[in-house]
Image (tube, rainbow, N blue to C red):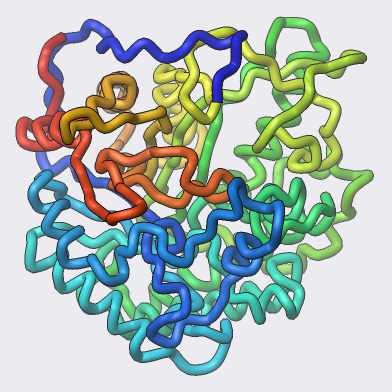
Amino acid sequence: MSNPSHPPAVGVLDQGPELTFPPGFLWGAATAAYQIEGAATEGGRAPSIWDTFSHTEGRVIGGHTGDVACDHYHRMPDDVRLMADLGLKSYRFSVSWPRVQPGGSGPANPEGLDFYRRLVDELLANGIEPWLTLYHWDLPQPLEDAGGWPARDTAGRFADYAQLVADALGDRVKYWTTLNEPWCSAFLGYGSGVHAPGRSDGADAVRAGHHLMLGHGLAVQALRASRPQAQLGITVNLYPVTPASDAPGDVDAARRIDALANRFFLDPVLRGSYPADLAADLREVTDFGHVREGDLAVISTPLDLVGVNYYSRHVVAAPVEGAEPEKYWRAPSCWPGSEDVRFVTRGVPVTDMDWEIDAPGLVETLRRVHEEYTDLPLYVTENGSAFVDTVADGRVDDVDRLAYFDAHLRASHEAIEAGVPLRGYFAWSLMDNFEWAWGYTKRFGMVWVDYDTQARIPKSSARWYAEVIRRNGLAAQ
Ligand code: IFM
């Protein structure tokens, strides 16, 4: 996507000194089940909301689906070898709920669990620490038919599913995150409807957000009881939210969007309360009658770590007449009660998602979580960029992506120097994959995937990242 108001990224490395990360820093890469596995109808897997959504005309660009994706389900041992060749210390993957518990309740599907047992064994045999995410957006369709995340019962179903996975894999997986980016599940899935299940109702989005967090808390309690050695956390996608000017209207717009994007999740999980201003902002949308006594105590069950996904910054302003059209995550109804806030573009370089590149925002985000919320170890569980890649002479020279990683790793190091207990970094993504409503039109991978042949080609960024891992840091530029 090109936007004449945005200069393209330049692919030039920022100047900077040689940097060394703390010993034991966990260098990884991340993926998610529906984005890479394929094998949508094999091994007893049943449909999730993303199968239904992607098979519904007009929902995903080009009618793309995750039916085959990167065919990782069949190519898993080769993909793990690729990870080992890159020297990855850890691999963050998600378990497909509809693969291991196809109906969303009831007994586990042994064949589904077996795939993840084999994956974990393969990782461990290659010296790669498995990092397991329980939910990366693929709710079993029967649970959506019963009400989805706006229904309270889904939280309990999630905890039961977490227990099944813990019983099967808890002896060999140390790191567990419950949810990936609950903001997306709630506000893109039930607010704007640009993600599965494609519903559009502000009150449902808020209820979904609460029940996702309740499911998280219940799952943490179940995992803690059965696997006391496990390191447990959640992954949230956070954005610094900056007012476009000092004008009070702009400052208030930033406060409102910050409440919906960040504090909606950080406050309940890490403080055990909803922000008071959020409830006031949402008074026309919901009375929070879905929050029951004791919920916030469950949601704030103590964790061992927090995962932060970081991509960009929101710059916002008070509404004016004739504002520019909203797009993608900015779709108005993903901001219930604040639909009229304007998202401002600053004219700085962007990625192929049109997301502004803002590495200092990562320092701000990590410092904020640490300084305002918690002393827990933090991990960047996703960070990366889509760019238009081309294969020439069998190589993919993705200089823009490489520069993006370099800048954000320098930012990560700066955060550590500022006192943030940042313990690891996961590049998004190991390989090109199904980018949700964008289908296969956006490439985030360090490894190129040819979707016709399923050939993999490590891009320049992958080779560069392998060297970063080898030296546990960055060379001087
Ligand atoms: O591809 C997604 C991922 O599934 C969740 N975090 C953001 C990525 C890029 O959009």
